[in-house]
Image 1: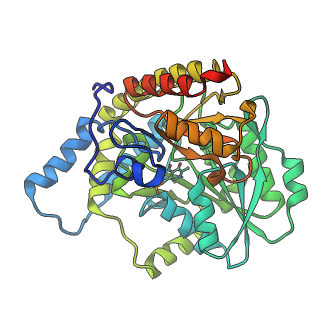
Image 2: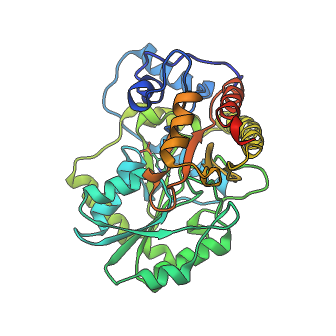
Length: 390
Ligand SMILES: Cc1ncc(COP(=O)(O)O)c(C=O)c1O
């Protein structure tokens, strides 16, 4: 597998590339798209083969017997994360934004508060708002370029109307792999305030050497009756278009409620997602992920070195994810100016920090899951765009 191959994605309905010019004004001719979190790599051959097999057969009817699919999930979680998943505890949703929305719908009422540790993945905000729940922003502390939690402050913020926490673990943006103590802190916080905990672990396979992701369910058995786990193949294997995610609910009562809402809404997964996921969660898929993480680690080091040598810019040290989170506050520029320099001068489309909530104001997020030559070009262009700071 060569992650170095530059694959032209224009004209493929890629939101990342085909919408870049429209959304960011970054020209198609030589722009570099570094926003939405999908990768510019093909998935492993085993995933391609699973789709080719469907194509060759040529019939795309309703899916039946998902036992191999469930087994592939339990195999992956056990071998890669040391987590024994009961196959009966798995629900498949239309991706994890849908999984999050389903949790909000199932376990909270209109007007209830839903806690987010911000800045955090922007779609959480969108689905909470759209469901007429209140976003309760508990801001992460930026401690020398590393996000930390401050539970004393969060305790003081609680009003009693909060019903749920959505945790992003590992964290997007900023790339923290939460430690056991931090996760225990979240568990205790949920117990203190009687909150359902939804742990979105979609980035759990993209963890850099020296860090270990701990599935929330392994941290504290006493929170099982308030815990919903979410995982997916889509981020790991770059198959987000399959819109498939796993909501894993160990507790029977929570599971029954979720199952009832799935039933009431008539939700069931598409066969493409199931075929691809079954193929991906395999020894071949695992070997590919190991290579991918090593490649992303190289991209991350290259990018951070270039960015951190520009005075006033600082890229957070990613422990996981391919989403570099760059702080421009040291430049003294307004958000409009640094964003304009990145988009107009460097011709790069990044995600804008404020969409991630409070604490994201002075940041841009850059997607590094692209061939190294594009990361190199991006570094050169950013260095030139901010050359007056040298
Ligand atoms: C934390 C997190 N959850 C969910 C998603 C998207 O999930 P899906 O494509 O399955 O809806 C993303 C995408 O970047 C993400 O970062």
